Structure formats: C-alpha cells, structure tokens
Length: 126
Image 1 (cartoon, rainbow, N blue to C red):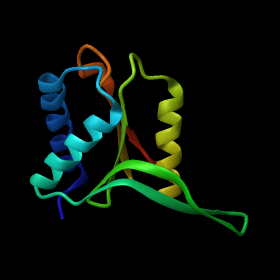
Image 2 (cartoon, rainbow, N blue to C red; image 1 turned 60 degrees about the vertical axis):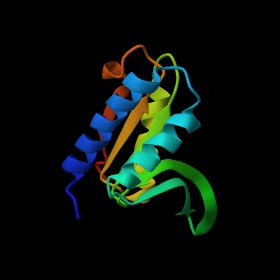
Image 3 (cartoon, helix red, strand yellow; image 1 turned 30 degrees about the vertical axis):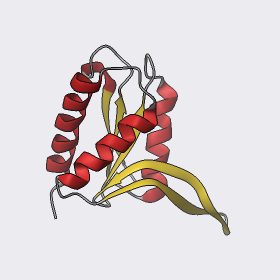
Image 4 (cartoon, rainbow, N blue to C red; image 1 turned 120 degrees about the horizontal axis):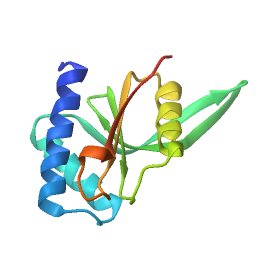
C-alpha cells in the first residue's frame, strides 16, 4: 500500500495538471469525475460520493454525509469550484476526518485563477 504522502503528492500533481488543462469554473462534479478516472488509471482505489454512516449517543445515522472522493481508503478529497475557500470548508473536512477516523484530507478548489492557493491539506488529530 502506498504511503499517504505519496498519495497526496500524486493527487496534488494531477489536480494541478487538470486545472491547467481544463481551467477554472467548471462544476465540481466535472473535476471530481475526471480526477477519479485519472487516479483509477494510475492504479488507485477510488470511491466517489461515498456515503458515510456514524453513530451519536447510541443512534445510528445511515448515509449521513457523502465524501467526494476517498483514495485508497486513506485520503479524503473534498472538491470545490468556488471563487474563494471559506473557513467552513476546512471545518467540514475536519469533521469528515474525525467521524471516519481518517488521517489526512485535501480540499482542492478548482475555482481560482491558479490552483496554488486552492489546495489545503488537513490532518486529523483524532
């Protein structure tokens, strides 16, 4: 199994290529679809729109939220196509990481003029 840093690096490099080729402003689903297909082509296991269950005070919630992409059962990707990321986007991903007990996640915002300011790596502190 590939290390999380290698997976993250591959995803970032691919996202940069995608953004340069497709440009900003497409729907999130377009970037998600292409990113998933290219990651699968690279040999990664990718789950799209993965429904996540969780439990709170003894009550189970089935399909409570969906992860945009889960790569190799290790890396959560939250895909955005907005002009600017907001603090709520990071809070959303941190909550996903905590509830799924995943170590690392990336927010990738394809909406900006460049992707440099559109990538945020977040780590779950459990």
